[in-house]
Figure: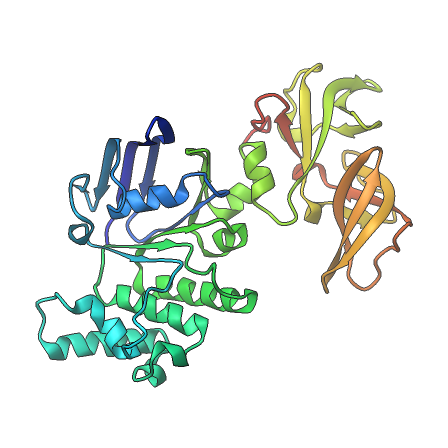
Length: 365
């Protein structure tokens, strides 16, 4: 395996820059997911690592070796695409072994590698079938197997699960996670699906408009987003954001909400001075329906239930409160009715505060 280092990477199409001086270090054996909306530059970054796109500035190193001028075949990487790109006229065995066609290995060793990949990926019963006889998930495993047999330094995945239905995506996420744990491979994985990013990654790289906005573990990005974009992009449903202004309310520094009423200032943002325009953030799973008394420093929102979304163990509540639409949760067995009044509360240590202009966090890490 190998580490990957990107230094001041620039990519321009014509006069339009799409990657702006990108810096990123990926450790040996790490599973890193590049995530962001369409057009953010994540697939372009992956293709530059692979050598399928030339860089216009900076340096890419794989395993400590500069690879800027090397062809893809000389970078010791393997890439798995959204399109399976497997040959319909070949059996599974021959498709997996195709990655070894130019390897200077005895045929017995090639056969051993194919059998080993088939066993790891649960494809042994299908090795003599053709792709038309396989499910979508099995075909994707064939594509992964073809990459595996080459023993690459780095695996590159470009939205490999996008063509699968929801159930198969969940199954393949689990299989890719298990594969990484078995092999200890360095993996760079591109997706626009934040659920895939959260469930697969050791670290997530959030990108927008060719820039990296935040890098961290799934827990860090979910619980300590550095900016509004990350706060909204990571997590489903997205974080509630309530506009307001820091002010002195009843002798205490609080957030005077634009829709009326006030909210406590998060303890982690205690140094923010009155007069500043802010966005108060709270995740739906931290904003729960309550019947009794909430803590004195908790955020409490009262409003009318407009939509109820049962999810089994819990229910999502869409609530109209003081001119704002917020999403909270209630127990799955006894959700409040549509049109009913509900009180939602969130503990102070779950609240986030962002500067309204820069959209950067104001909470201390």
